Image (cartoon, rainbow, N blue to C red; front, side):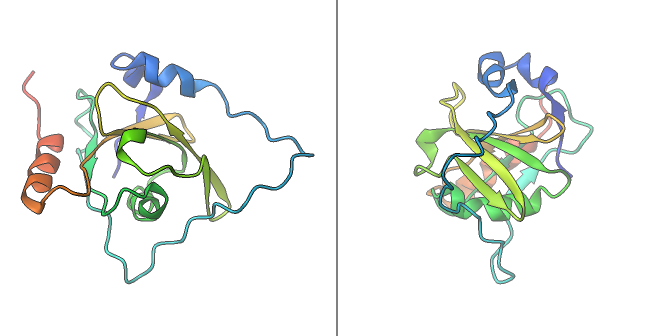
Length: 165
């Protein structure tokens, strides 16, 4: 379902943003005090699915892999639906534009898996990198929650439309 580019492919287009995220996360010291729980709520059956469009797997040439239109600016609240829609692989990190979101925790837990949330001010505003355990990256254009339905729909269609080369 999701396009899984390698870091090498994406670094050609945006090396300064990715280089910082290639390094492994620091190990947490065993003697460190326990942090408050940042466990995400599993998506409730009554919740609506993520408003997400992804390019077909065979379109690897463009930088943006899809578009996501969250319902609020609270990243921790919106992530369960996004992660449920991206079930094809395990997500380890999410690199997000901090200007688009209210401040989330630095790390969240889904099930028994921790996901690092890392702010980065992208040159291409409203962009999000979803980084998998296999170093695959899906780059999403994030449509502002305040966008009207018609504008958001058009932006989502444009993000996945074939590009003229």
